[in-house]
Amino acid sequence: MMKYQQLLTSLCLALMSLGVIAEDDKSLLIAKVTQAYGGEKLVKAKNLTIHESYKSAMFGQSETPESLNLRKVVQTSILDFESNTAEVTQKFAQREIDFYFRKIYKNGQFFNINLVNDSYPEPQTTSRFQATGYIMLINDIGLARLLIENPNEVAVQNDIVLANIAYDNLQMKLPNGLKLSLYIDKSTGRIRHSIRHHRTYGKIRTDFSNYQQVDGLTYASETEVFYGKDLAMVTLNREVQVNQVLENSFAQVELFHQHSPDLYPLEMTVRNIGENVYLVGKGAVHSIFFVEGDLVYGAESYAGVMDRFKALEKKLNKKLKLHSLVVTHHHSDHISGINELASSDAQIVTVAEHLPVLQDKLKEPQPLSRFTIVDQAVKLANGKVQVFDITTAHSEHNLLFYIPAEQLLFVADHYRSSYKEEEIIAFTDLLNFRNAIDNLPVTVKTFTSVHGTKLLDYQTLVEATDSYQAFNCQQYASICY
Figure 1 (cartoon, rainbow, N blue to C red):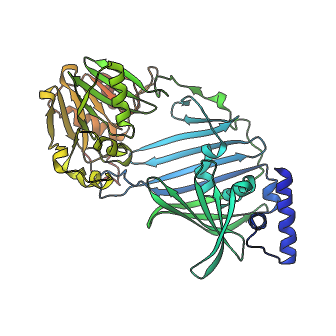
Figure 2 (figure 1 turned 180 degrees about the horizontal axis):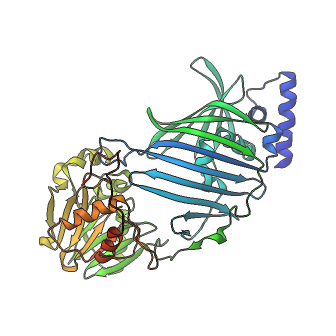
Figure 3 (figure 1 turned 120 degrees about the horizontal axis):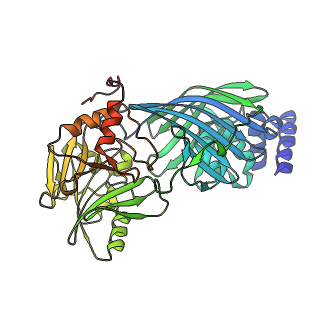
């Protein structure tokens, strides 16, 4: 690889001095881009450190389908090419809570660390790109490095003119198998645009501008990302450093601990959590099911919902019929399995305000007879299951799945159940949530969640929220209970 990289640099320097450009030659185009971003300096870079912040649109994640919230991300990415190691430290500020993560790629494994409790799930065997891919995709200098590292995955496409600017066009097969088109300014060799296709958002266009130079390298300090015609992300600031002396703590996984495998199991797991009540899922996604004879009533339409139902059938060793399944709320991740659900005969339980979102998500619109509409509350299974609609800053409509005989409440997103030793940490909307629960005409003894397997008792919720400072409704939130 190094011989190829050195050849690219030599070719590039020779071409620049002779003014020769072979637009149909892949190697020469890669060399042209390499030179534009620093030439030998980029090829031989030991490491890159990228400090950046940006705001991104939370499509399908706002408190109502009609509104759009933004989240701010502050991150530092360190890509160490010598050891093929990477570390990305991130702060996500969204809705009513901040999240802190560190992602480490080391020795072929990816560790996704939650810095609130310094823990990570079982590491995944993967590539550096899989661990840090988004960082590379929103940084043109990262794309230039990918070209250098993966020349065999690059193909030359026809030239193109956009807004009266002539571009060379390269297509690169990314390490994750997807294809990325790069539009390279013929006059400068800089990557000005990239286009890729996402299975959910369709065409994603990334624009690079406002180029800076540091230590012999060139990079775009501004990036805008568009999902179709919608602006999805814009940088606030960015600085790039090369060949920094890395701290001793860099990529030290030993500073953190792996949490219990029971928190986010890798295999599909069926847990009996009450009489005829089952929590089924893997990773951080679970559905709840109540079984009455051969009929099943459930909640949570995340992708894989029918796999979770089939796992229940296998566990109970009998044929079951999914009678009804509750869509907890309208957020895009929580309705990602709606087409699976529509392919069954189950009633889809939702609120009237979310019907347009669900119909739009469905490959084929469903008749209204397929939906059970909740107006404040509804009873299923002759009252053995109750569904309540509450309002919090997370979503104007949150459907809760309640089993009276167990005094058990299944919720989505208002807390993350965790392993036994971890303390439940209160935040702003957990107070919204407790307020709403206290106003329901039921007694709740135990909670369980979409995201995790620990059962939370009501007294723990009380203690966590009582010890939290009095909350102020967030400025962005149009809804506060």
